Length: 246
Image 1: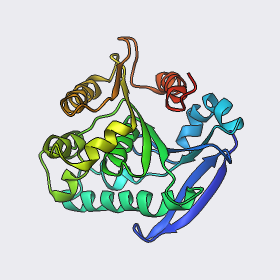
Image 2: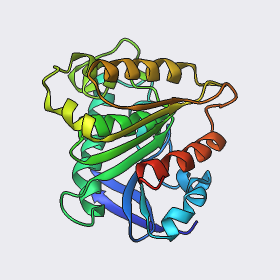
Image 3: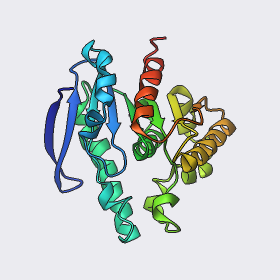
Image 4: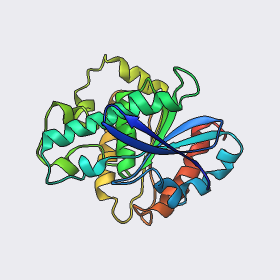
């Protein structure tokens, strides 16, 4: 599907960053790419095509961001503190630079979504900044730092590991009420390459249930693999629910 290419300089990252937009009107949907992914992957893997009916009718507007996973989560041989700090700089780029640039008006909230590692990133953005997002659709995510950082932990990394900070978030923290007022969907298949994602999704389910947060946790069938053909089906299934179309 034809989109619009954008590039701008990020003061947080000290480099140019790129992104694509699809559609001109409708609910803004921020898309975070999968591990080591790029801003053009959502289109290349057919996600924009299956969402075309909503884009072309003006119901949604996609903003497909870029990532720097190669410098952070995927940089297994790098220094843990530097990797975590670089990730936090990217987090600030998304929240302080990209989102204000693509908002139609100040204070507008967005839907955020992603697949695989994009699901982790999406959930982390949503959980840390529920003031910016009203809906989350996370498909096949892990939600802790361990898979990529092993035993390493510091204060910055802790802030980016949902299954760590949610366990320790006080019950009277105002974010719990914001979560209750938002739409949260976590989906995972039970087929090939989904084992770690199933584990983390179950833990998220337990944490949210303990705090009376109404999250839609959906475990798809044993034939549902960690792969794009299923994510295309899932996003088409869940998007109308978020948009309250059915």
